Length: 248
Image (cartoon, rainbow, N blue to C red; front, side):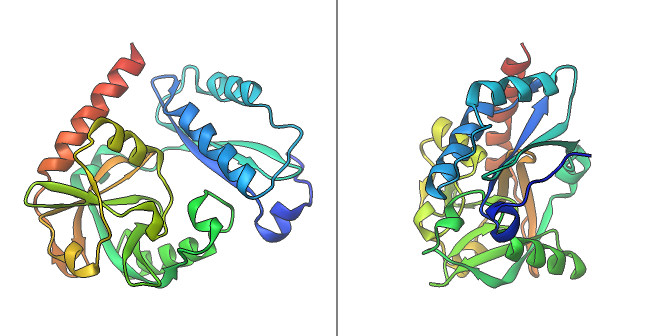
């Protein structure tokens, strides 16, 4: 059994992590994941002597060889450098069904540095996710203290109205997801705009993104149904084309 050393990561959640998808023996977006991890380490003053980027990258790629549809998790605290593996929980069946959202009771704190980094301080996400599942939903959608829409417990939100794709700006209090970065890079027409709950409820289409699910359609928010999947499927086709190139 791996020994976990007691430090501020264990005691106070002063740690960062990344979850990296593996597709056909290759890590997906590994470099952007490590970029974000290191930004979090710098912001939270995490100095881990065992962390060396090239060695970590080599280890992640080694674990990916010959594997498919698994998740590599990397956790870094002051005294710990931990690698974990698990199966990817999102399937084609999940995509076919889509996801059901509800509004979270807790609010995202747009003034906290922990909001903008993938830190170990994620208790609100865990509790709200459990509450959503008990109520028959898949993901809780968070508002910030100003009442603007931010993100779900595990993903970034995209909203489509009259063919225009919008997503909340980072300044409203959300994590800059690696899939979010990818979509903004390949499809600059996406608008970063603050979204009120009413705008999301009145959308033609909603979809979520993260590194493990890719692009996932939303079928409902509370009691409001969303049947359209047009723009999400267009962007998903671009992502699948990227994965095919990665495989080659």
